[in-house]
Length: 211
Ligand SMILES: [Zn+2]
Ligand SMILES: [Zn+2]
Image 1 (cartoon, helix red, strand yellow):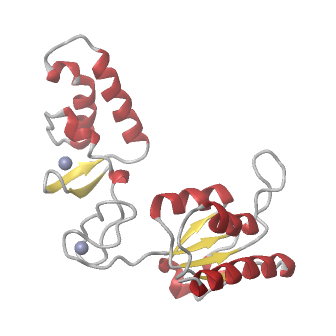
Image 2 (image 1 turned 90 degrees about the vertical axis):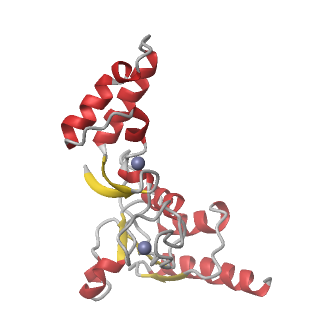
């Protein structure tokens, strides 16, 4: 649980995180199956769960299901209120233009192995092709991506989809406008590095030419 500003309630409230929100969603769904008119009784388990956890004294079950930290974007760098959505470009409270994090795709390296240590806070890290796709689907396209190519073995013990697969996903499947994307290939695999660079550079050049 953590305290975040709620746009609907217009105040700071305790918001559920991770496993807590999974439990709350389950208790909410269970409440609908209970043949009972009184909402307080019907959703008693959910209200008790939330109030025991937060000490908040919530009486409205519907409020709890929007007090889930992950529904909203990260905190605004300027005013600290959450961006309304994960893909929001501006803060609805103060108008601040959102600073997108740079994205670092690598199965093992840390930021300071490629960039200056002082840049660590500018990056989010994803370790696999699946994390890469999920991150961009959720947050939108970053302004800058740093690519590794070889991403080790998958859970099935086979070679995992690599950085080139991630670049291909961006170009052929994501449907995103890559025109303003900046990238760097930090992979130590020279052949794959050329392939990723070639694919993205040519595609971006093509987008700019057909503007
Ligand atoms: Zn609220
Ligand atoms: Zn703001």
